[in-house]
Length: 392
Image (tube, rainbow, N blue to C red; front, side, top):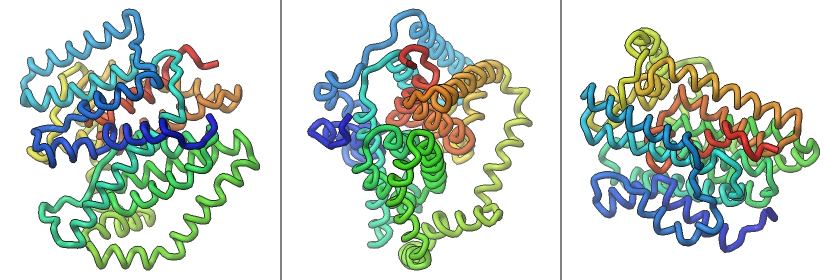
């Protein structure tokens, strides 16, 4: 990995931009007028270009067969309960199907370059920024009439975009990726994105000292200066956003400031109350009940599965299975921590940091289990956290 962009860097950037960002949903739903997003179109279009660079072979053995059989069993249970409509169930099933496929592909030694993964993440996050800017432009010219301010994207790709450059030689392009993430924090209207960005940056910062103390100081000089410039111009930036859209200003600035001061908004109180809902419903969540609906445009009450995805996992797979997987996942996460901090296995640092982000998302944002353009990334991270081969 030489850290210098080349032709394949652009291919992987475009692959992430069109396939693993909300751009795929925008094109297929808004432009092509399809009833649902089809990121598979773009995956198939890029597949001939990347098949020699990415190892897409599935894991052989009974694990893959059992996992797929188990998913179809959960699908069958969903039909038995009949709580949600068929389209909603199949939509949720599709996300988990791609998640399991990704685990099967990457749950073994895989020669896929982390540099290529970085450019996919860069394209994904840049696509998210472009749609956020288009949404913001609609606010400026007054064309936004549906009341929608937030633009959601690939949180998992965002975290990897921040984390990966710390562990491999991508210092030149790292600055541009951080600028994209910073602009996204202002324009997406999603406070959860800001949280994921800050946590990823913090984990990267402390991990970099373990790798090389003096290189870490040099690497973070520009990001620190960039953050300093934002701080000293914060008042002007805040005033500009207020003049364009008071609602967006409220979401990004005022609510974030209140949270930092220990004051919770109504939305924050609702998220805190999700814990009470979860524990009060625990008796009904012991056994699997099937896939849920996350079509919040039809029923706003389903938003709890987006705000608190742990509830979705427990409802879908049952409390016992969720506890077993949590123990297994935490065991492997701790193992990754040990491999990185005590045995100097660099890649384990990436998977420990990104795997920790997934745990945060379980209590914060459920899009990483919902959208078909995101769940392969979720499976990619989970696979690298739990895999046994290729650690040393």
